[in-house]
Length: 216
Image: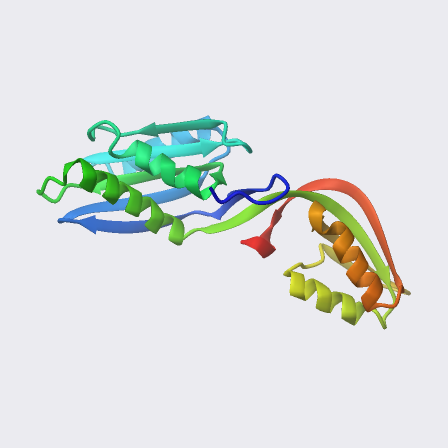
């Protein structure tokens, strides 16, 4: 499972759609962010109405920061050939608050148990390839204060980290607000002190959960 350090978990930033074809059957995977069982149920019902003429609309979802709520449905496919493989892709990727519906248009050729498992698995993977995924992390809001000689070096450091300031105030001194993962805090502080020859203030303000887009 693709878990992150310090309790981080992967989240969907932007849903997507993917298509997989197997022996003339067409599998359309639609992936969406859902933060409750009610949202997931509404999404599944929406897809069933959209693809009302399809043979099957199979589904799976993972809800909660620890993935504590999971559900899946074969929607008429042989038991264990659709919903469970779909759910295993989501849990294997370590993504939370995510739902997927795979719509199947039957092509006239039976795929067999193994073929169905492979097709539904590959369809979900195809859908995820067209999504944007980030990492929800526990870190700190930090205020960084420096002079105009030091700001260039600090911005260079932040660029190497893939971090962007939440805000920047260019007054008598430069004041940046950052969101920093907890395990990176002391290392980043040390690098800033070294880069500016000590001409930097680094104040930890409060703990904060945030989406770390630098690790997408």
